[in-house]
Image (cartoon, rainbow over all chains, first blue to last red; front, side, top):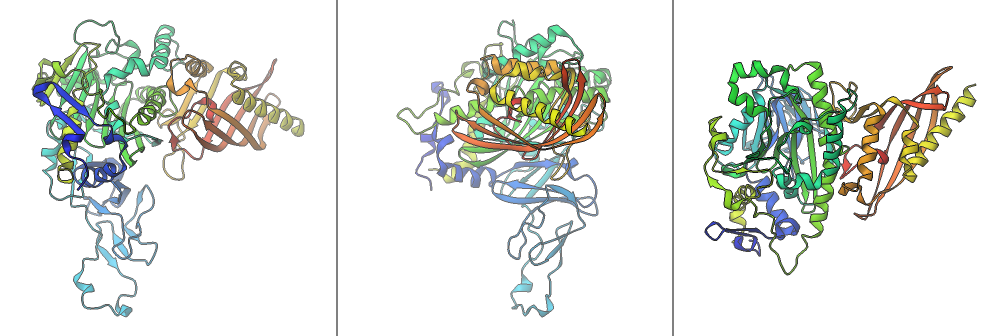
Length: 447
Length: 165
């Protein structure tokens, strides 16, 4: 049991208009160990896309918390999730990030498993003089206790005692639909994965994706360039979706966007954007409207940053990004990122999407480094001090209402709470959903 | 002729390295043709890089020097926290080879090692890999019409800007 009580860490008093987070959540290594065990290894997490293992015997590897995993498609076409560790001595049986293998042979003593995880050979078994107990053990690869797919998105839980995947995703499924339905053939990952690290807590990234408040202050250098490029209209410069939109402009009038919070820690922040040629999706605007209706189509053009707690973020703003947060230490995080795109878009639309992506989302681009450096500056200030409570979860609290609004109604979306924002609202109350889910998973570890 | 070309190519690559190290970005930009291609591919998997920038992701891909001018403008703007304290960088270029040539153009292969000190964060890092330069002869001397940066250690620690590679 931890030295902390939950109330030391999260000061959640809705009736008093208070929601505060203790810095220790970002800086305490012992709490981080508890998070690994109870959040990442204790419930549903995103593990990858079905399209990463599309054909029979395709596989990819990864981690859930600290545990290595293998996702493999069997010869019959079924996707399964396994612990990527030989039952014999624990060696990872697959070392590549992805590939195709009918058989996985452990590199250490050649125990062999098929693509459905079944043990096919224990080297020199008959000569092995095993005791009677050995045959009673299961020699197959250990299955991840819960494993499921929603429209190509794969989730798994090392803890068997969790709600169903449908319950866990809940209303957020409708937001995944808004991405997947952009093509009647679904989505794919553009070849080329980009990884980067930053020396700060994983929750800095968790919050930043949903933080509209930071955009104009963290990214003015990028915004200036967008503005200049929008004026130039030269072919060779990389144009951006954001260059023609009002949603982040400080002097825009009326609602420009808002936030939705859902059960189990999922949140969306969004901005109104028009159906314009600035988005690669424009070429199929009419086709999509005919297929899913004009209101869903219009929502696909809105800026949307979706977090599926705790480790998946889908950002559709300057381009379209799939991000996976991998916590490594209390002050060190690895990000795995991909450009996610509707299948079958034209070569020109794909080119535009990729160019917009690189400039905005890459750690080698013009925006993300300003975020990650800011995370590191925050991490410095997370050191234990006299005033433990952060003041970064307070904006929007008085604007937060139960249920949805006219915008969620348009697509039949039923959030637990919502904020309809002006350009300067910069809602932070959607983060509460993260920390309530955090508290729910950490409850058994904290008094 | 090849020896002469090799010496000229080395001189250009070393000069480019020095300009980046010094932060002389205007002079650095001037080494590129206006329609230059600047490309740092991403990695598709452990052993293959992406090869088509229009259908696969790159770490950086620009056609046209004006995009590089934007990058320079950004780091100088005073509006980017990642660029506020300039990293100290040192480019070392080696293994320079002429891989193709015509009277007015040359393909140059080389290795690079960039040592960086991020003074703000108090840490050092090294980026390394290979360069492929396409050079064209102009009335102002050799200019870079294409530069490919094949970064081998591609997990980026917090940031990587044009002067880091």
